Image (cartoon, rainbow, N blue to C red; front, top):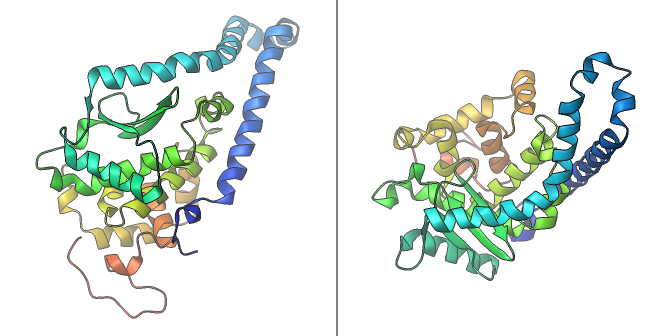
Length: 290
């Protein structure tokens, strides 16, 4: 499907995965209540588990405490970013801030989220919200001067995190509905994978020349400028089969090659633009790395 507008970035399958995750989340909540109310009688039937009864009950109580803890955590994130990072503006690193403003204008996003460079972000960048105040935090790990050398990185990341906000994944009730399931390895992976692909689509849609902003997850910043993009795209095209698929299921984020291929399949990073011929085209001449 050709992506021409923001609505095309959303997938019905993402909603299905979210609903399934909410149902699992509800089941975990009910299980926690049962363990607290009837845990002793049930655990007595399983001696090995009974030895860890206190640990099981403590986990159940922690699960029940997760929703109210979200209020504290959401405000703590904002305080950490504002207290220990740089808030960007027309005067503070204006190139990055103007990128965010441009993307917000393109999507009709108002108000414009705050943008910080700070350490609290998970991974390399993440969007958050606290009491109707949305903000994006980018870790400084990949930033160097001049900023133009890392432009594809920050453009892609800002676009991704604005997508998180646009999709509503920073809202308190969305965070609450999956508060338990996102803590459990493997069980959380379908939801995290679907969301990773969704954020990537926003990043590529808003910054169509930012393919290196995705490739950096594989190469790191130090050698990013040396990466031959068509060669990596060819690698992504060939990384298929049972074992890549199986190993991907065990990861909290999909393989970078899978993510790149998904964006090419969506037409957001056209194959012909990076030297890979389309199905009906003849061999494309080899390009210099983009």
